[in-house]
Length: 474
Image (tube, rainbow, N blue to C red; front, side, top):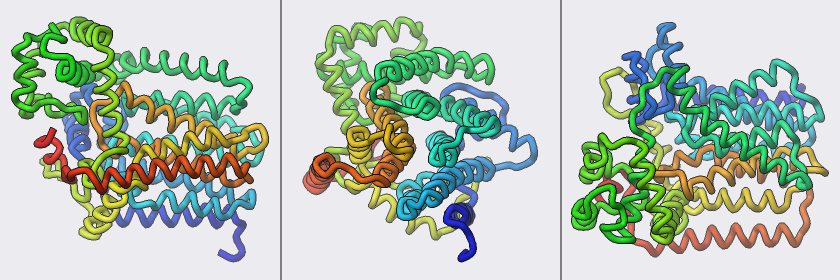
């Protein structure tokens, strides 16, 4: 490698790491969601509970005779490492070799890498947005414009990322606006309005695309958020707060300890508190949403208390060390489709990755603090690296803040892109000298978040690491 340029070395290193990851985790891990989507691929019957764009793409590989989760695992691994490799190469080309190494090291950080081995929508979204970031970095850090081929690839990847998760728009809109229209703080109002317009348009168009273009049948998934929130409001405001169901139903909610600000799953059919779902099934959608919005309007304190409790859980701030859904799944769940598992070497790796994910270093709230620090310290008008860091930090911040109002579960994997974006933004920020006072304040803020998280982990009673612990406790 001595005769290679710095950017070629970084690109070659990323390519070798990509191959190593594919071999180590092959053929990828089949999560519960993976199996549910693959069932749609095999049967040809699609619904909107999981993103139909991912299942439809998967069906193309299946039609070509490549069965199993392998093709989608290859896709998200190659997209992710292409993005990291391009970003690292662009930084190395500009002389920021330590930053280039940090980018590649972030791709190897065990919690992120362990969860990226799962073939799920979160990994697909993160990989697509990493590839977009890498393409922009390769051009923008060298003061070049995207060519037509790169622009077409970026648009396709952004569209895929937007459709592959129901709440992806909160990350994609600020990233896309900030990348295509270089950020300047003087124009923040117009950029904010544009981000809002893109977000509203995507929220309106996504269901139409899912149902009319991808021909996915409605599954009732849209009602999960109202059910989750109404149960939280009824717990705090009393059994008469939600007249959609009889007071006796909400009293049973208390009697059977069905109250949860952590996840919706306990109300799903087949779980111990599914009587809420049974009571609402068959009701017109507009009645459910009207009751939900009325409950929020009439009991704002109860609603905000419920949402803040959930946000704390999903951001993993004041939670115990062993809090479920943080340890990456090392083996595929039993299934009838022959979706296999990686080798036994992944078991020990994922246990270590889970320990890190459960620690304050793996808390999404710390990544949010890092994104806020980047936004406070970046000077995009003076540095191409800072110009790229701002949309990444905005994307991470918007995604994490969206969980305040749009979220029904607290899985660690939901934060894959946000954490990658926040820490990549921090790496880009550090390529330029920073004002000492601002840097000290930012470090103090990060330390405060980390130490309060550590105190909670050491002081709160443990819950457990697996999904069953969560279902039984909450």
